[in-house]
Length: 454
Image (tube, rainbow, N blue to C red; front, side):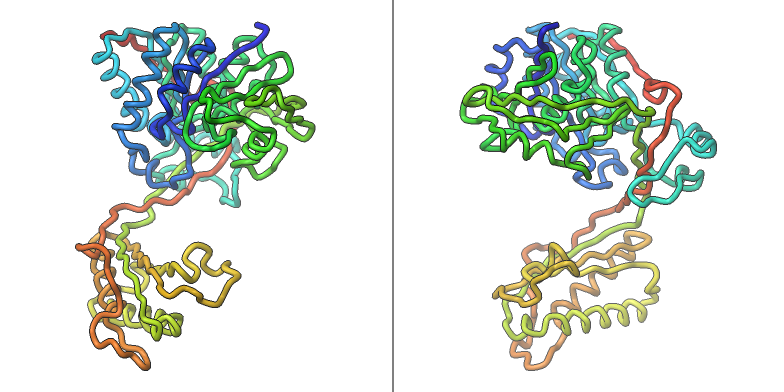
């Protein structure tokens, strides 16, 4: 093909996009439409809990418009990292929404579900065979770490998508996948070169993020022989060399080297040229094949969490807040011990907004200039009852503890919510951030096909 056109509707399925943008984008006759649906950005909870960080209402709205447009144009609709985290419950949740839309809109199509949650004992065997390597200063992956994880997903490359397309899938819902992989897959399968195909995926994975003004919306990327063109369908937006170059730096430890399954995308010689008033041509990228690896992401239960939120405007208290918080921590420790709660059975953190709530010890500005401070007190314990008990003690101490030159003889804090103590339930932490070298790019990602009928 001389060119291949891909339409991304939004940075995350469920973030929304302008319906008119979709209409204009479809008028350009894209060869595929899709959206990435997940990320690790919201943290480990959603992978561990098996739920989506976007609402069902919003996801169904976005997906309904995409499916109707795709079936009318007879082009594939591809969703990567279904359900927000790409595990089995996330994929099942996404599939049920698709089936529901098909019934309501009287749509029929062949659907592929690409699973991405590997068998645990198979992972143990692969780790023991030396096929895994740690990332991000993680320890070596061993059987205990694998078995105690709540959920582990593998991040697929383009090959499972290509296989599903080869088998005639018209709608593809994938488990955890590399964000650009779904786009690179469709383009490479159509005969486009790997370098611009992968770069196109980098642009498309977040929808209209490479545009200005930037907000969730559609992006059209056209791939040609050795370059690509980025253009937003929405006439109120435009791509500029700065907006595209700026976006190319996101979510990567290197500004020029992007490691993907099976290779390295090198952008050190990339050029950003004005194509039209609203479009940018990107050229000069290269692709170097490398030994094939996929990333593993896993989480384990870290405890149970409860929080309380409060604030103060007392200038006397604010002037001695560090001493006050030291006293508060000591009081909570003593009171919890008196009730038989061991200090090693929980942790308590107080985040002070208006002082160093965002950067904590890394905050370079030490002087408090705010007239008010906000506090989020967090307790994580081995069980929910202990977390609830300690947060209640912490709230009481924060509210009533004495301090020098205190004028107020009642509560020191204002609480915006009743109930003031908020039970958050299980807390997860990332425990698996490793690579795995598979024998075949598709072997960890079984594909299930079904015919969806209205």
